[in-house]
Image 1 (cartoon, rainbow, N blue to C red):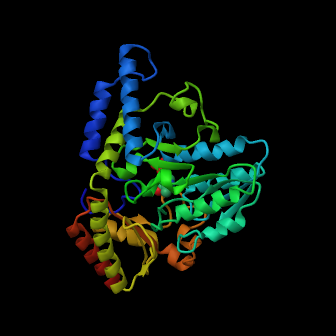
Image 2: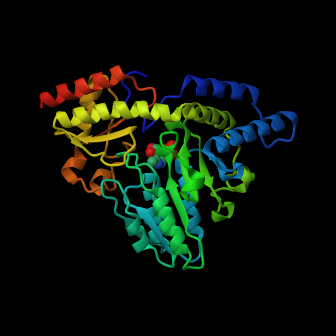
Image 3: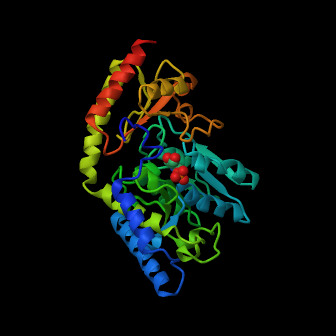
Length: 375
Ligand code: PLP
């Protein structure tokens, strides 16, 4: 798709993922829980998809729970807390996606002590995590790659702070990391990084929308949202979206092919955009250890105006204030990162894919320069 720079919102499905979906819908039309031959075939295909996903991600098959996407995976983790009889403390970074932040009022209502962690320029300081932990802490939630400015959190350092603290208390603290924007776009190491749970959506890597997964190291750590039917080992009841799951596995396989080479190519394009942004006198809100796939900038115009002006020229970007444009309420993430209200209100997000072309980038830079000159 030409001149599309909103891949952090969604990427169009790849031809391979569509083909895989159509083939799976055709070849496995029956319910994987049925015990007739067609059901058994569907069940086998489901388990093959799980095997593929787990082997690509270097995790165990029983750590993969297919869901309808990241929002559901996140809800499974957080709603588990709401059931607990004795509320404790949770630490949540201030720059989490709304799918996580929307649980804050609910947790508070149920008596949980919610500590929000500051994240200057998008980065949570592991020392702040250390200082906020107490013996009542049950969960820490810090995303892996920020969807608004691409900041890559130091997940292993945060995990090691938590694991060290755990030695002084009697229970385990669940470390959850929403990893939607990290999948296939960073050297994600689920097994080695020390996280207990992570969420993913297939549509961010050219798979179908409405499918994703929860990575969960200990299946007893959460209580299912809906257990009926017993699917996904009893953790996520409901007939599986098999064709989408198979297509997700195929998109993942595709995304991991020459993954590092693709990231390097995107990094060069990203650098080119960043240099021209600074030359043009615009402000860069993606600084430090950030994903090359996401660039956040501030312009002299309100986010929506700049986004529309680019749209009029045929370029799709996102107003950087929210991942979902419906999510107008709540704190602006760029502001929460410490960039100030003015810069937050004029921030936009440019996000790339491994298929973004050089000439598209050049055309975008030219359009940004033209708009900026005219202000
Ligand atoms: N978390 C992050 C970081 C995201 O970027 C998104 C997508 O916008 C989500 C969670 C929610 O994903 P989905 O809408 O596919 O459930």
